[in-house]
Length: 397
Image (cartoon, rainbow, N blue to C red; front, side, top):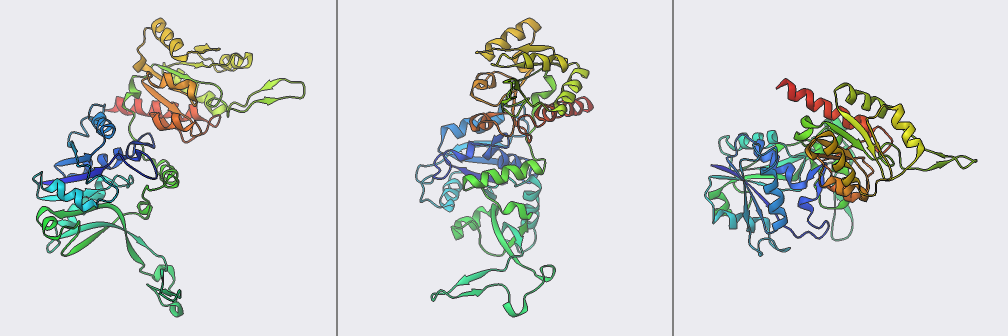
């Protein structure tokens, strides 16, 4: 039996509880667990943690609309010693191997969210080849590498400075990306190491060289995932009947503009107008729920032909609750777009909560979907198209 072992601990020096911090709309550990569950050669996926918060987060995947995907997952505990700052990953692997039966183990690290199920499939197919004892994931890199000797003089490691090769002629190096390692239970006990014997490598894309260890890595990888179109499914979208948004920071860039006469002005995006039109054509009610009370918001709502305009809302959740009762809708049928602290109460109740790319961090970390667009730059259009695309796919099934 092949199993995945994903060790995640609650303690982290650089990013507290980073394993369940939101990355591209889901907790960090979600991405590698999903990849493991999509691997056709894995029978079980063990997530070992010392944190109750992480346990609840992972079990939440199993209780969500994606429960079928996560049916392989088993959350287990790990000792305080194995979760300490000084313990090696091998220590945690051996602790696991002494308690659970399996033939082959794939060590998967949560800090590699760009890992895919197909990468793991290739790993197991390589491992099955004759004479292979263990496998690791690597990234090919064409970099000219140097090392410093005891005298402080630097020397090239992988090329001759007098015969500098052209990039297309340079083989380069293979560099560990830390995504996964595969080894048998027997070899693990014999070597006390994640790799031993005849080792083969599986190459992954150069993008996967990045691991999340520092806050700056988070920003880079999240942007890369969005560029590649990697996102978690929003399974509740097909049931949305009411599409609501805040105004400032969502429909606008949050700026306040004034003329020399003191007239207040706001900048709206025409693409959002088309987004509302598309929703209306598909029978979805639309509206604005905002804490501000401005005549120009009213005029904009009228021009966009919105069904609802609620202004001066100190308690947005209470206002939407009233709207749901009036329209005979449930909160699960509501999608809301917000960007600031006064939207958090709605976040806890809405079926789907989305936010612009420049929303405050507290909102971004817990939103169901973080848009690529910033406030006032087409957020409504982006979310509207995502909703309608999801609806089309649901109808095609």
